Every structure is written in C-alpha cells, then in structure tokens.
Image (cartoon, rainbow, N blue to C red; front, side):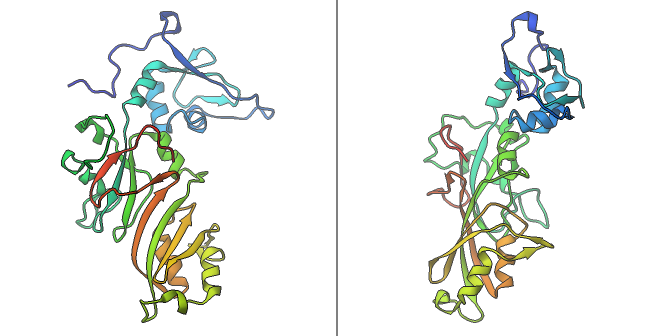
Length: 281
C-alpha cells in the first residue's frame, strides 16, 4: 500500500507549473526574525513538525527560493506552500471520542490503555454521517489535543492535524472547555448547593492558584443541587478536581461536554466519530 505521507513524485519547481498557496505577513518594523517552522505555525499553515517535514520534502519556498531547515525568516517573508502539502493535510483526520473511565488520554501507563485504542471500526458511532472511510493509516500520528484524566469521561479530541492541536492546546489558545461536575461537600452529597458557601463559589470563579500560578477566571455555576458547570480556557493537570479540593468539595463525577463550538451531544461512551467538515472549535 502506498504511504500517504510520502510524495508520489519529486517536488516540482515553480517552472513546472505546480500550483502553490502563497502566505505573506505585514512588514515588520523591528527587523526581527524567527525560525521558519515557527512562523509557519503562527500563520496557521501547519504544526512545526509538519513544517519541518514539508521543508525536507522541498514543498516550501521563501521569497522564491527553496527553504532550508532551521531557516530564519522575517515577518514579511513570502512563504509559498506546494499543493502536495495541501493534499496531504486533507487526508488528515480529527476524531471525537467519548472517553470512558479507566482510559488515559495519551500513551498507555500503569496498565491502562490509551483512548486511541478505542478508535476501531466496530466502535464508530452508527450515527456518524461523515463520508470518510476508516483506514489504519488514520492511526498514524493520531494524538490527543488536550487531556482528560483517567477518572473522567466525555469529549476527547484526537487529531493528525497540527493546526487543530495548536488551536486547542497552544500557549495562546482561547478555546473554551465545558464540564459537568458532580460534587459532595464534607459528608453531604445531596443538595450540596444549599450548604456550599457563596464566597467559596466565588473563589472557584477567580482567586485560586495551582502549582504557584494564578488560574485564569472561570465560569462556574450550579447546574442542579449536586452538580456544577465549569467553563475553562486552560487545562492544567486534574485542574477541576484540585480547584474543588481547595474549597472543600470532592468530585464524584466529571464529564467534558463541549470544546469550543463542538459538543459531545449524544455520542455514546466508548464510541467515536469524525469531526464534520462544518464543525469548528
């Protein structure tokens, strides 16, 4: 079987008539430069790893000349991408899975399987209406764009597309993540809302720190007397559980139901579907 990640013919020069996508930025007053792979990621063309791969294949030109690995570029450099790179990106998949308890988000650890192990044809949601056909090559480089701890369930994004990963977990990400969190307070697990002090709810919204860093403001409100709704724009390790511990709450159940504009919806636990073309995080 032909490897879809390798070019089927040598990269073509501009004289050969190859169609290219041209990306350029506004001129820079400072004259500062950055590495080409970083600049390509900033422009939303691809991930840094993909950029290095494209450069190695001869699919990138800077100001009309073939790009070199590690090349510094100015902000106003003209970056041209060969159409073969676009074709490769169109083959990449993004998969949504409803992760069950007991599966880890990333690599297997302590005997627990990674969520990607569930991405098999028999677990594809029957209501997934994507025209994408399943193939084992879709598992190559398929990685989680964000974490969901082993004791939690809900929406987990697995992607081959570096642009999606950067949007969701990049340092400048502003994408919201929404969670439903069942809690107890001391020995009480019924009508927790009536017992929980309002000033502690205010702390959950803003004022807590983790690992020596102040947390960004969060939206936190009661969904029902035993369940809170959290909306965050960051994702520190076990963040919600650790936030709750600081105000005397104990998390008994946690489910992620939305990432940006994409909802978990009715996707069953342990099943997956493809991200639809019209969906945007």
